[in-house]
Image 1 (cartoon, one colour):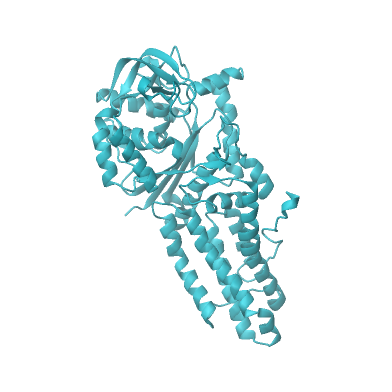
Image 2 (cartoon, one colour; image 1 turned 90 degrees about the horizontal axis):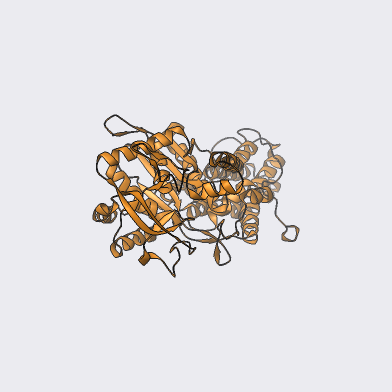
Length: 504
């Protein structure tokens, strides 16, 4: 039984500003962090995000702007932090790979692996992709280009250090087959297993010569080499929450057996997290994370959004246009986590008008209006009694909602869409109850006890919904809680005024 929860996003590469893909992963991680804080307690949850700041792409981007790499990264990092503040991201720690704590950890990892003969020096000749910062063999090229990004490669010959990942292939296959929740969703687990069964792993080049690439973490035992950016980046998950003792043992309160460790990533970096990372941990004698969850991409039409294609959607623009909670809700509700989604403002507006304006916003506003009208703004006190079948069904739904959320957010598939759907089932039941009960008739006929019970049902629903949506839409949850009050309502404007499409 785990009593703590450690959730991470990837550390984001700072060669350009953040886009919707970055915000998607971070909002999902924030939702899980908030949910688990409510469940386990604030001090039992650790949420890590950060920035990846080394490598050739950074060096070249800095040169293009006439800045040093450190100056360049110092300029870009605040744009990520500002976006996370705008999106109401409640991270506990923000790690930069240029920080001393991370540099020390990476160098210590390299020293430990070197002492264990897990890494070795060798001459290398092959093809190098600068955008991916990856070496490829002649056989791996596709039409003489990088098999991942399809861009040109350069022929390089140099002396480097290699990590013996090939020695761990059989172990990793066995581990994945016996730990089906390690990679989620299931389709990604199958993808990695198939890759390992069909391909022979080659040892991973984990260094770059200083003379070719000066911007990286130097090897302490070979100062003429710097660390390969992907090896450097993966270490952040442990460098942020622990350290190595004199005997090379990793010590951390956030990586013990009592902690559930979850990495959220995009599917494009699955191989690094599902192959390189577990092998690094195994070689270091460190336990595995519980789950690596690789979600899908957001597409524009038929194309994946990416900085290189120049077809990115700005999260800041969407938040300024529609509001932070609307943006968060759309990303988590519209597509099951793990599948690809198609982003459009039309789809966002449709979801806004249907779910937020018509359903949630309408329920809250009409309930507050009735309390204002029938009870002079004072919330009737007491627990509602299930006076009819609808009220009874709503009471059962309220009682079971926590279990539904736990099955969708506490298990390995993190189905945000289904969790929200279960909340909206309760909202829709309450709205139908209003239409069927006709409270205006109860008032006219002087049925005071029936009217009181009716209002108490709606108040119970709204309070439950306010708590349930808090991880997804924190600002809306606070606003609803403040408006419904304990004894007296504070009715404001409608939470989500309907959007007329012609105005956008």
